[in-house]
Length: 390
Image (cartoon, rainbow, N blue to C red):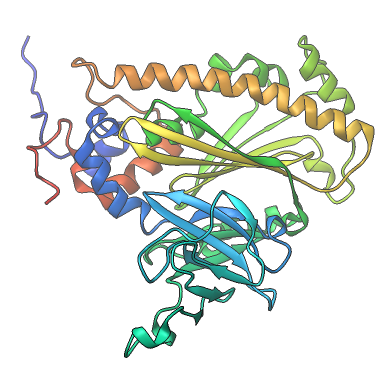
């Protein structure tokens, strides 16, 4: 029996594209990784911290992203600003570590060029030896930044809509969580994963694997796990069942989770997940809100950056619920780690190029459409000849 085969390098129609996954080669190809740094990540919004991480003048939070050192600082006027964490003299890094307080000035440890908290260059040793130096044009290089519901985002280049515009379909829903009032619980943690960042993003928005690979979530939600995709945001959710789980951590969480006064009844026992294009995610629980970032390191390496935020609550039941939440999701994370490692290994197989997508895999379809629009080579089943991106 004969059949017609599409050439492996041929592009697909939009209808065909939606029914297929992105090709395996873009999950491990170095040249594609370089291309998506330019097309996907430099214009993307990256979450640095919450306003309550930097409450005082001189408080700062830093983010290492795509080889760039980025920092947001609270000024003496109370405003938060974003800068490249680089001295304008000889490019020395200015502020060390992931967070801290620099006092009333940002001073370079190399040659003592000194900047105000609003980025102005205010002091240069041996200034007379720099004839013609314009102090006003040598302030810190600013970053475009936006504060959304208390969270501080920055980006390297313009291009995407603002965070508030991207999240607009869910602003009313999120308002119930009073996110501006959140405070950090613990510190930022970094978890390396030997997979492509898209593998992490795909898994986060994949609804079909929940009842297969996450028995704990299945015990908590049953079959009631929902997903939907908007242009810039994926949403997933599940409501806690009233039937006690057979697992003690889950059963005690169901039992101890107290009422949260500022949440309406329908959100008291609801878990919701949002993924903002391309790599920022919020896990929203009644007891806490976690954020995750899938930071690309190499074609086959990703750093997951995360921290939990909470509303101050000293009730014993709430402390217990938050601990049990951590136990439950620690197991989910271990399960996901094994899953994405399996997929990343399979992406190297000569037997696999693309796979079929269910009509219900709306988030993966949406993600694929955006990747193909930004980097048209995403339509190719096999990698093009080296040098295609140039």
